[in-house]
Image 1 (cartoon, helix red, strand yellow):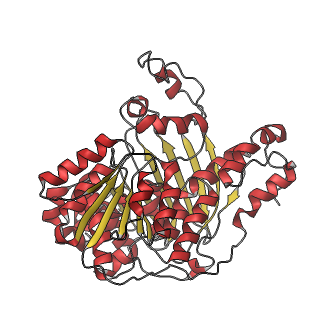
Image 2: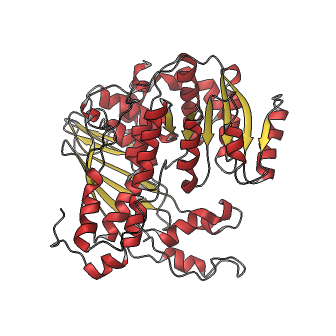
Image 3: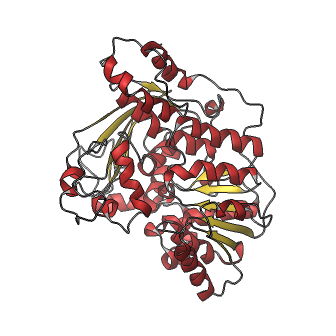
Length: 469
């Protein structure tokens, strides 16, 4: 049980207990005593048994041409439609669903312009996606909807026998992370979170350096999502129903952890020899969104809104089972230039991104020169970026990482190979969101992680993307 001696105001905690219950996915815990609530949080890390087979290394029969359906083709989903179409005969688009008919139709019109015909549209009601998923001619469902819809749609899709690829973060509560894991195991279907940054040219080169021992023994990493989104979040046409801004009114924590964290987790072999142990989270004063709200049009629902729960900067410190540390930050409100930091420190060297810089033992106390830096990145460039260079140049997507990700997803299904990332990765990286919020609600107390692999994280295994060499 967590000690009551933590820097924690009991009255404030009781007032916040409903929020803690929601983040755990267990409902309102107001009826519990403070000690019982603390015990409930401590139980997050209690091992769970399963009657089903693990999906670590899951292989399914090769699918010569992957039949794909989409749920959500707004900002992000529309790009995924274009990338899947660009894969040619490797995949076939069967159906598209979006609650907004015009977005579904826009994607269908685009496909028609590329010669793709007979794509079914499901947009009549808010549950049309369920009707679509009952079809028996779909192998893979790609989900790009607001965060709170991810789990319901993914679970239903797997229960209908479909493989799932869903946008980040995969889930928003601890219990929902478990739902994804349990359903994937029960159905023996793939459930991969679409963390595109893991396929970046820089990130894969660093992964190769880590794999070959260039950084020595890894001790520390830093990751972030720092991106000024004020204008887009307040826009009435940016995010559907301004859903992203609504999260900032209700929640304080790391709402979007995976872009920066995914690559660092892969460098450290999380769920493949190490695991996240516990975290501590805190946020700064909130000021930017309140001040920006004064500048938007008066008919904007959030004009002069001054009740934002999320601080301008959230910082979360994670310690792994092997004792490594990770500093993870989330800031979409300040004018700090875009960065995912992408830092990794070891006993022989150090890398930090934005801009990418390297430092190694025996080479002085500063950064390598531009020429020396280029030599390393040329030597350790992942071969997939060379083999797909023409397609990457043509199709792009965040500098090409989107295309590489979609290619690998479909290619693994074509060949009957395990996917590069599995449901355990998605749960491990996404559960940062509720755990960071619980830590803040409880006065910045340490919160332990669940073990979604049920002990199998201790098995060292190579990432699929590293087995293509």
